[in-house]
Image (cartoon, rainbow, N blue to C red; front, side, top):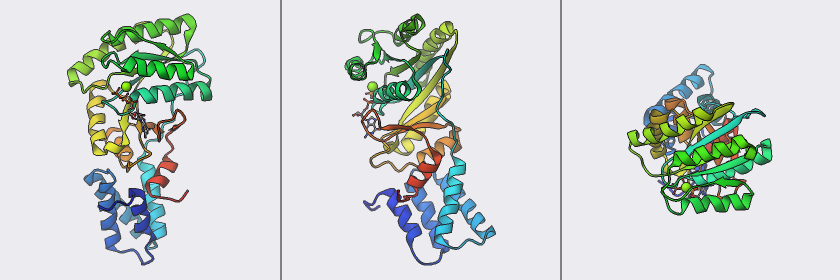
Length: 294
Ligand SMILES: Nc1nc2c(ncn2[C@@H]2O[C@H](COP(=O)(O)OP(=O)(O)OP(=O)(O)O)[C@@H](O)[C@H]2O)c(=O)[nH]1
Ligand SMILES: [Mg+2]
């Protein structure tokens, strides 16, 4: 393990001027594993790459790298973030464990959907578990000029969502973005808590689109995949927001989410500012993963 950034090490691997050898593929498999690929997936990918190179008589490192980029792009599910209809009420529930960036992402999404899609967001403070969580969301709401629907600390998250729906139905907004508590639920507690919210959203659904997105911290590597597995099995997720892709994150997780769980990454966040969010772009993601110069 060096201190060199992961992407730089991939770049170095393909930057060597000698012809490709068996060793290149071995080193690549090792690097993919270090880059948060699962081991089985890393070997499968490298096998597939070797097949392609053999069939097409590719020996040049640059060309191998291009073939790898195509292969990796093909692994990623491409799903554009939802565009809500003009008469449609969007309800986005943000889930995830402690500290992954749910509250920050809620604010970023409110800002993004308002500025780029002309939505009128409402933030719902459905994290009633942590004392400071409501204030944290209110501060974002004030800064952004977005209304925050909140109850008291310790209240029922489903009731907060209910009030946000009431507010939206009476014209206060058309996109509810609900922050939730980041405690590690047992699966059954998580399911129960969300069932209640599901029922409330469904009872109000004239014309609504209800989505459950999992927020994952990209710096936690394979642990993020384990979280996704648990949440997806419990509540059937619609997509993922990958956060903290600005620091030491290696990024292989997006491939596992696609390949193992068929879960699309919808947004990638790369900083703490409101603007640090963008729809997932497989092409750009693979380029960055492979350490392409910009
Ligand atoms: N560098 C970086 N930091 C981020 C990003 N997203 C969130 N953060 C930071 O991560 C920390 C936790 O973010 P929160 O939004 O409070 O996370 P949370 O999931 O709501 O946390 P809990 O409510 O405690 O479960 C904060 O310091 C954020 O500023 C990101 O994309 N990049
Ligand atoms: Mg929070």
